[in-house]
Amino acid sequence: MKNNSCFSIKNLSFSYGEKRIFQNLSLEIPYGKVTTIMGANGCGKSTLFQLLTKNEVPSSGVISLQNHNLSGIDLKSFSKKVATVHQTNTAPNDMTVKKLVSYGRVPYTRLGLPINPELDERMINRAMKITGILRLKGRTIQQLSGGQRQRAWIAMALAQGTKIILLDESTTYLDIRYQIQILRMIKALNQKAGITVVMVLHDINQALSYSDEIIALSSHGEPVVQGQPQEIISEEVIKKIYGIDLAVKRVNDKPFVITV
Image 1 (cartoon, rainbow, N blue to C red):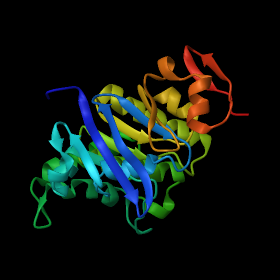
Image 2: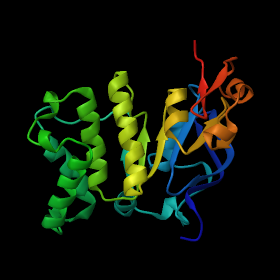
Image 3: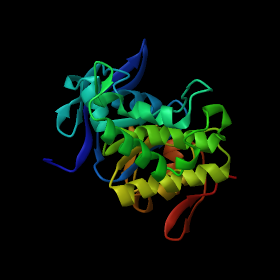
């Protein structure tokens, strides 16, 4: 790799109809770290996620994945490099966990048939083991708790065997216990398996606690700050991001925003 960037964004512009979301946005998302995109509602977090996952196309500008223009990478090739877990996911209630996870191997099929069934089986079982759902492989989706279901979707992404995972609001609709379990698992995937994680999070303090790098967007879709949480977050920065005065304290040398 020529540099340490996972994604590189240069002069990106994007609009929904007449509503401009980004104008000449440029930033670098590092390889090998947990990077969280945060900001107020409507700032463009999810839109940026959709652009990074090829679900939307820039009006102008370039998004590069490991020095290759994203627009020139076909979906199958992209799926071998990047796995994605969206905020809302659906699957038939009677589908088993193992069947769901097995869909992570679709990029490695030819004419709908597996190329290497033995490798597929190893990757599927490995993904379920890492996410702690191997014992649930025979259960159906409807038999899972919210946290277990989210682990199953992450396992499907892991089964793709990529070194990059994108997660959009992966803790939404989960209670605090499952939120922390998922975030700890995501952090472990980065530290122990060397997986680059790019995620969108709504909770300020969770973003600050579980991220190596923060990209904070303003209400106009412009980066307010980017960098390590302990170096860039202050009361002034929080005011710029969210438009509200909130106290910022230090807990274990990390910034913590008092949100009450």
